[in-house]
Image (cartoon, rainbow, N blue to C red):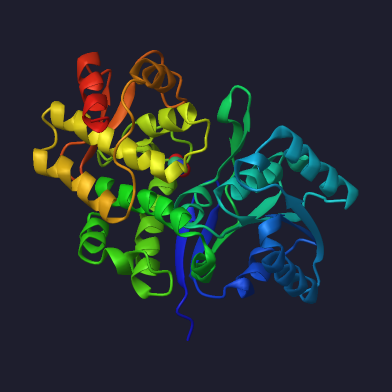
Length: 366
Ligand code: GLY
């Protein structure tokens, strides 16, 4: 009997996120109807990509391999153009498909290439990092970076399926795994607080890719993401019918986090920046009387138990504030923060008093 976990998402079409071990067998079903399949992958994953190519060829697909640079270096207009050229040379038609095999940068790029080729062909995402599994590959946000900033060029384009093979995490560098945990913990703070309880009681098991707890945490984080995306795919709703926040809730910790990433020229891992960002916004909520001192402290303790950063050097406030003001989640000139009114109870705080903001920075930079 299969023990694979299947989580449905409904956006502009419905698709499944499958979580388990050794999941190559799901790809032919997700790619059904395609004649040609392009596997977009970084060089580090060439062995996995080759195994995938052999399996898909056995199933009758004509496979094109497209090797791209590592990490953020692949999310450029030049690399996207390289991929379009490869699709053109192989004669990709509207019924053909792309597979994105790699971390969040690869699934962002592959999704964007699929969204733009012939005005949109199918993409199946195969994330190989924790961040990719619980966030980037699920939900249909695709994009590349330009001189104007990160992810400013892109498209909402849902995948036809997402395959999360947790065995990939066994060879993931430890710091990448821990950075991905920041997004898991984020989901715990804004929605499924059982995630926090489990990470707090079993921090070692929570980050052990060969154990069952991490798989279950991925399941819970993906379930929340699937629910949020299914109700507000294009991030257009401030609140849903039941009063809960729309997709914007996934931005918890990201406003300050994005500013840190920008200031660090994207050399910090996204999850590490979001970790500090969550402490910043928890401090802000504390100053606004929305979180108690112990709830703010809970942010520090859970993130520290995972080895994630909770401070940022002092002396950079004007630069960080300027970066937050141009974040793409900002509306007009008003800074907007997802804040907690108690753990698991998110809300929006638009335009907090600048003295509160400076004091929250002071608290994380001490
Ligand atoms: N990464 C946040 C979102 O998908 O909306």
